[in-house]
Structures are given as C-alpha cells and as structure tokens.
Image (cartoon, rainbow, N blue to C red; front, side, top):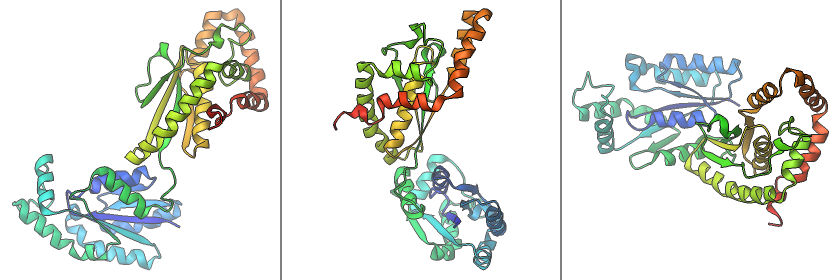
Length: 332
C-alpha cells in the first residue's frame, strides 16, 4: 500500500531536515508543492507504482496554501491514505534560528516584525496542527533525534537496516577514492601479480582468489576487519548515516583489492546489512597490463579471460568458500 506523508508546520521548525530524512529512507519527495496539486501527485504516483511519497507544503504557498484543507479532503475521497507530520518549535527557538540563518520569514512582507510573523503563521496553521497524525516540537531536538523519530513513526519496517554500504576496490597508484569514508590498505598481502601463471588474471578469477585467501596473514587480517566493521557499522546507522563508502586498496586495484572487496561485501550482507561491491580500477589495470605486454601477447592475455567468463560460477564459488565470511571469525 502506498505511503503518502504530508509534511507541514512552522517555518524554521526543520521541515527541510525532515524531507532529507524521508529521502534517505527511500521516499519520493516534493518540496513546496501547491496544495491544489497534492491530489494530482497522489494519483500520478499510484499509476506509476511509487510506494513512498512525502510532500512539504506550508505558508510559502501564499494564497494557494488556503486550498490545503480541501486538497486533503479530496485525497480521502479518492481513497488515498495519508498521514500528516506537523513540525513545531517554541517562539524563542524559531527566532534564534532565523537570526542564525539570516533568512526572512515567509510572511515578513505582510508582518515585518518577526514576532508578528510567527504569531500569524501559528494562527494560520492551527487547524492543520489539530488534524496532524504526528506533532514534533523540535526546539530541543537534534537532527539525529528528528531523523530517528521519523524512522520510528513512519517507516513500515523500523528495524530494517537503512544504510547502504558500498565496498570499492582501487589501486593506490591511481589515487585514493575521494568519497571514501573508510580506507584499508591491502598492499602487505601476498601479490598474485608476480605469479606468472595467474598474474594476467584478476581478483574475480578462482586462481587469484585461492592465491589471496590461502595465506594465513589474509585470514588474520579479515578476522580483525570483520570484528571492526561488526562494531562500527551499527554505530554509523545509529548516527543517522544513510550511505557508507568503504575502500580497500592494493597497488594496481586488480588482484588483492578486488578479491577482498567481494568477500567484504558478502560478509556485510551476512551480518544483515545492505552492501554492494564495485571495482574502480579493474578495467584500467587490465588495459595497462595489455599495453605493457605488447600487441603480440594480446591474444594470449584475452584467452584466459574468455575461459573464466565461460564458467565463472562453479570455480569462483569453490575458491570463495576457501575463506567464507564468518570463517574468519574463528570459533567466536
């Protein structure tokens, strides 16, 4: 069933923060929508199978804002179930926020004095506040606490993990990923690049995976890495972080980092998190290797890659099971 949230309330009470929280939770959000268009948006989203919608509408709509009560009645008549989130704050808190941001109140042209603007807005919103399903006074609420209150009040699955984790492999010789939150250096692990039989392969191939994971140092390192992330990731989620980027790097970004990034993403999924793996420099390193070997060897280099792509599932899976996520923990 579609979730339709109407966000409204006092100017300066945190509606923009609330909308960003809903966006992080997967809602399609529209800010400052004229109330007359709210029923049309709901109908459009129903046809497009959009499951979660949050709309911000308030006195910024000027003369159109008076249509909101009628628009909400139309929503009910067309069968759209909606909830109203009303954000409020004490007058002292609102005045302080306007002074800090140096933004003018939406009613300042009609009421030049800020106290009068706040009083007029509060009166205009009184009926809407009475209809609200949830009222949050943000006077002494931090952005993190507001986000958590929204999560508890409006998400169908409040205990489901919301943070998306991307594990990215990279090569240090190509530079650090600029968007990484955590960076781990794997260059101390044994390097398959110097093995003539498998050096032309990459970290998605079974022989390279076996080479990386058969070393005791790898097992020890992944055990510590597993324990670190098992502790840290829930802390990031509680802090309200919606996206976490973990970068693991080796020299070229083709062998060790690729194998470890895939393992780490799978380990995080086993812990119940949403995690994906990407490989920034995998193709670039492969091109550099072919250019280094020269045109005469291009065919020889391409052949193993074709063999690997023909049947990657069974061999790669067997190699990955040599170091299953969770085995690194030992007998914890």
